[in-house]
Length: 269
Image (cartoon, rainbow, N blue to C red):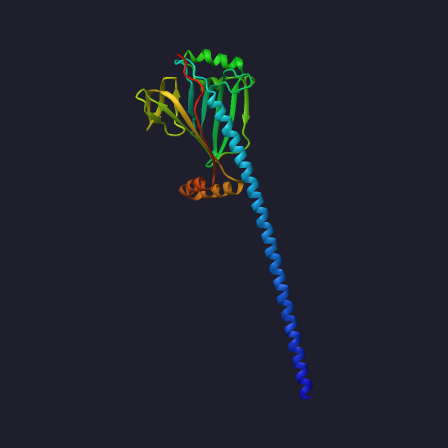
C-alpha cells in the first residue's frame, strides 16, 4: 500500500514537472514570438525612418538648389533700381524675397519671388513665382519710377506668373545677407531682416530703425531645415507647452541644408 502511494506521488510529481516544463516552454515561445515581432517592428521603423530621411534630404536639397541657382544668376541692374528685397508679411507670419535672375531656359532676365509662409511654429510653406518676359519688362520700367517689387507682384495678373509650390513643408528658412562696405569690411545682417539692396546702397531694419549704408552685395547664406512626420508631431506638442524646449528640439532633430551663394554677375556701372 505504501509503495502504491509512493508511486502515485511520484506520478503526480512527474506530471507537475511535465506541466511546468510545458508552461515554461510556452512562455519561452511566447517571449520569442514577442521579441521577434518587436525586432521586425523595429526593423520596419528603421527602414521607414531611413526612407523618410532620404526623402527629406532629397527635397531639402531640391529647394536649396533651386534658390541657390536663382541667386547665383541674380541680375544686378541699374543702381537706381532695387536688386534684392526681403519683405515681411503684414501679420509677421513669414516673409518674401524679390530679385531678378537669368536662371531659366532662355537665360534672360526674369523677376522672381519666394514666398515663405509660417503656418505654425516649425511648419513653413514655400513657393516660387517667376514672371514672364512681358511682366518682367513692365516691372523694370516701373522700378525706375520707384515702384515697389512687392506691390507689382501683388497687382500682377495670374496669367503673367508661373508659380511652383514646394510640397514638403520646412521647419525653418533663414537667409542672411553679407555686404562689403567701401572700407572693405563685411557686414552681416540678421537673418531674414527686412531690407532693400540697390547695387551700391542697402536699406535695412536694425532694432526697429531704418538704416542706410553704402556697400556691395558679397554673398548670401541660406539655411533650410525640415523634420520627419513623427518629429513634426512632437514639435507641435512641445510648442503648445514650452516654446523654449520646442526651439531646442527643432535645432536638435531637424535635418538641415546650407549654401553660401555668391552672385555671378557684377553691378552695372
